[in-house]
Image (cartoon, rainbow, N blue to C red; front, top):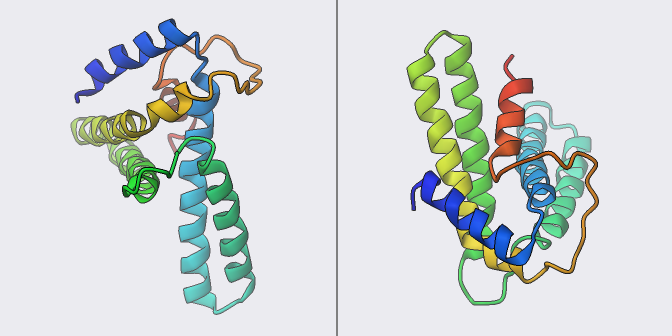
Amino acid sequence: MKVENFVKTVQNVKDKNKLDLSAWEDLSIGLMNLVSLEEHAFFSYIKTHDEKFLSILENVREMRKNLLKLIVKDDDGSEKWCMSKHFLASSMRMFEVGNRMLHEGKKEEADKFYKDSAELYAMFWKLNIGTIEGKKDMKIEIKNKDKKGIFSSIKKLLECCKE
């Protein structure tokens, strides 16, 4: 499913069920960063052999697992749980590579990585949108109500994380 078609599908779900996915988007971006933190803790431990990084890794992993349960329903015998984690991690990595390309002045290459990142992110939501639909009675308070679409968090990251 192409990103554009997926955005239309999400909009239909939002309109039909009156869902505010922006809080879920924020959570998914937070989960991406938690996976990255796990990786950094691992590599820091390997480099330094300092046990505090193992403790950080375990604490962050537990937090990520608990928060992922809010989006990913792991009850159908599939590999959805692991796929979801890897979709988010891969999306974040493609986004970061895109940022590097953009910083190096390679805009066309950056655009390709950004599109791949968005495509992976869309696949994550395609896999899990039913779980969110099932939680329409669960409200997550958000302060910024002017977010418009499923990729608003990625857009926000693009605006604030170009280093």
